[in-house]
Amino acid sequence: MPASESHAPDGLDPVDVRTIDERASHCFGCGPDNPEGLHLSFLVESTPDAITSTVRVNLTRLHEGPPGHIHGGIIATLMDEAMSKLNRALGVIAMTRNLNVDYLRPSPLGVELTLVGRHLQRDGRKLHHEAELIHPNGTILARAKGFFIAIDPALLEKMR
Image (cartoon, rainbow, N blue to C red; front, side, top):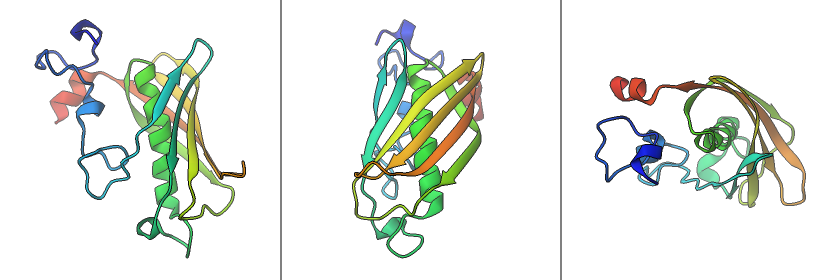
């Protein structure tokens, strides 16, 4: 990607044109350098009609809440990650303002589940997304809606 198309802050080494979130390698959800993290690697697809993010997850007892099932806080993290990845396709850095999760069914450990995020609507800096955690048999285990606010990358850099 040419530096002129990058969302990286001014003054960043022109060789490193990754976005701030791409350089945040210790993110609990997607950071490759976080030894305790989930290491989620999403496929983000963008068409004129839709933006989606998808990843398969198979969690272990490290993520257990009720016996044999994923902890609700981890499910909320999964939902937030699926929706936050949509922001990159929209060309913005955005932070979660509100997250609502409906826990529809217990989510089992040791089963490859599919996590899907979908962009719903944009109104200026306001971004609305949804996500679902889906069992291999098609049952929706959890569903979330999120409201994100686009922020100036330079402001985020200053706060570091």
